[in-house]
Length: 368
Image 1: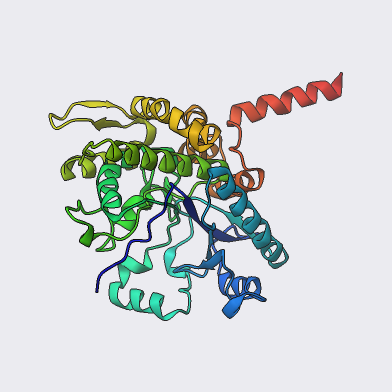
Image 2: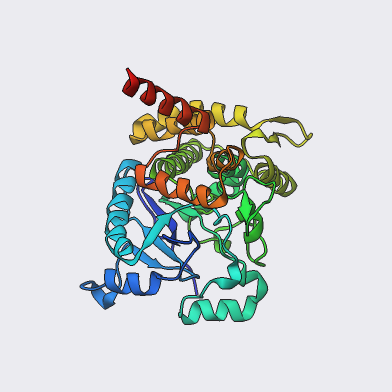
């Protein structure tokens, strides 16, 4: 049966964010999504909320935007759904956060959502599926034709390290520092269908454009950065195709190697930039990419959000911020608390030494 491509006349976007439900007392992941989503769905067709849904584990709620024209619109859409979700989590003693992995909860303690699709997945995959206590953000970008989408997916695979390093937020797994910036990306590869996308030669092998490489990020500001980067890249590729250019198709071995380097070292990775094996600092390639895309971002109305990539590099992605908490003497419970606060404030926590300096200045003011 042929697959029809639902073309989009402009690069509209949709964003999905997987949120973690955390017990206020223990800071462990805890089930609650089934009851919460049932209550959120009251009054909606079929009892299902149009912008909140189940995921594999009952400790996860996925928020979904509608089809949005701008990144700002998508961010506001997510904020509205998050506010609605919090009205139901707070009375239940639950906290909400977003990161690639929970720092210390054991996956074996988690309940699978009672849905036939998820039950079949676990039955078929067994241990790999039971390890999927991971959380990400997904960005969909509208494309005018299936052939364009196919070419874009191939080209986008060359930017996996940029997306992964900026979003990396999973240094901890089951109470241990993995040494990685994104252990989520490696856990996910345990599924037989996961990993870098297949390089496609024809439309018949493809359906839609969706970027699934990013870890869950703790703030909606950072979600907006990932959405802006996605939208701008697709728009640039669209313009190049219209001018008759052929989009690059990076070699599979380079895609795999660069993904590993970004997962391991985050922003400090050096990635391969040509077939000869030449390497460059990932920080440099990100900075150059943002500068190149800025004129497109201005036309799409997401220049401020794209500019946020520089803020992430200056302050440090979540994997750096989480490790700072521990380096300053905090526990993994403190890491969870910092992730919860970041989502609530929609901004990264200050560096521990900065926080100390602010506290000291406040104390001096009180004394005087």
